[in-house]
Image (cartoon, rainbow, N blue to C red; front, top):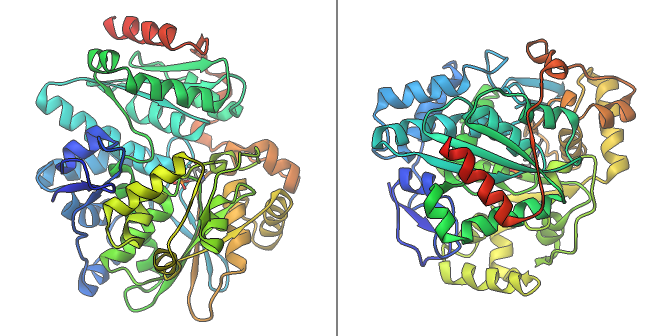
Length: 462
Ligand SMILES: *Cc1c(COP(=O)(O)O)cnc(C)c1O
């Protein structure tokens, strides 16, 4: 299995190389050259197997010879052992025909654990085998950084540095980054906004001398291995509602388009998905684009669902690649236009997108109302991201097709917004109830590239 760039100008790579590289050299994102198929019989056979076994069967065709079967089973087992629910991704009924896929039972209470825990184990296995070490640097507005620190803490072959904007992440998010005691993970609080943190990380990747000296690697949401890990729960949830005999639709709280794109891959593999509904908050560039064909970033307005506050949705490029008939040059062209302010999706590509994707938005009031109404009707307490999706799902139900809405974070991760909407305080699950008592370890850094690079080099040397 080879991986090719969405922009068509980078050399093809193996799964392992694509995972360790992240972004392609031509600025594109990696995709499998062909998408493996699951037959109806393969899909039917997933019924009743463990999440780990389903994960093995769904992902195995994508990884080539990166890992032997038994090694890969071990990686998957270790990745999901720390989840707080035996089903890993349990499905709950909200009302007739509408189901909630709970993806927040991982160690940091957000769906990003599904991908990050797996990628942590895959990095460790691959690097240990080749005797290499890498240094992972990432910027976060909260969920990605906590998931990365949790996934990589204590591993031998990896150092992790996460930059987050000082004073601008929730207390739970901050504590999840600052309380792990392992010496290979480092939380850095930068004076500035998320955009500053992200810009300094980009600068580090562009500083080739530094990049080579510390062997920099990235695990942000464009990493193909992260997308792949998320394909699995589309299969497990659809099968539990009767796939492949019955079609299902999904509504997905969307920011960088990684999660919903994993649904697209599941559909391409043969899972009978009717519609993928892209749910956005008031930062609705994707909803507007699917409506009008115009993709023009116009600034972010902070919301109570911060993990979906985006300007540029990086994984959307992967969907565009298929919509443009796998024409890398066409994708490179629109991405160039984006740099100059925005682009218009061609009529043919827009039509192709609309054959699969629908979209909707929820403003702040609608989000709060969905938290309240869902609590009243079903006793399920939603985080604001999941509430955006539940609101949008309501308008996209089709008779006879069950709707599965993805719940991407635990309500206790966003207690203030949840309490304001519902009057209910969401307690942390018992296994992390002492989070507020653990000692924090964090380094405050200025918004200064050289200072940050020096700090990282010193820490790695020790
Ligand atoms: C990251 C995140 C999202 C958005 O997922 P994308 O893959 O970026 O579209 C939604 N909800 C939560 C809680 C998240 O952490």
